[in-house]
Image (cartoon, rainbow, N blue to C red; front, side, top):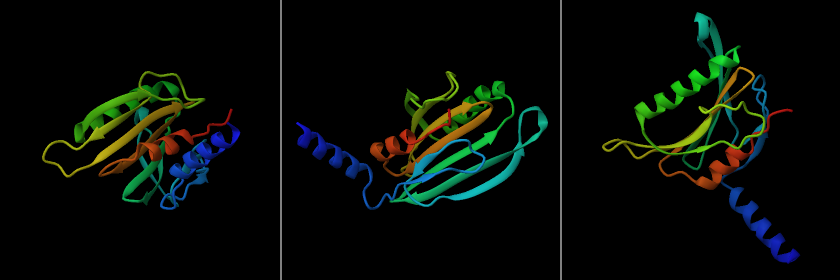
Length: 170
């Protein structure tokens, strides 16, 4: 049984870490988390209007691997009460652009308990170019996060590695 389990583990790891997806740990400065990207991400930041009329810095890291775009976006809203409405607006914004599909709860240790924190699949609407998006939104201590994977046909295994790699400090 030990040899069989070892072979299955190697096969499972190999499937999620194929040569086209070069997974690497990334600890974005100011994000308060660690995760894995399948390619070398680039970082961008901009000031945007936030709660109470004050500007907040919105940062993102993203990269392309195999025709898929992987991205993490985060901002510190300064007030944990502001994150739930912001997550709702993020889901609604995506739903205005694409057709919402299946949703599921998030199993990320350390995130704030909030009914607006979940993951969802979106597809192109009829007549639009073929596109699928996986979105996960969550928060912790007033910090808001969005994880996205976009492409013509998504790989659920790559999404599971991407989402499952999130580590929040204790």
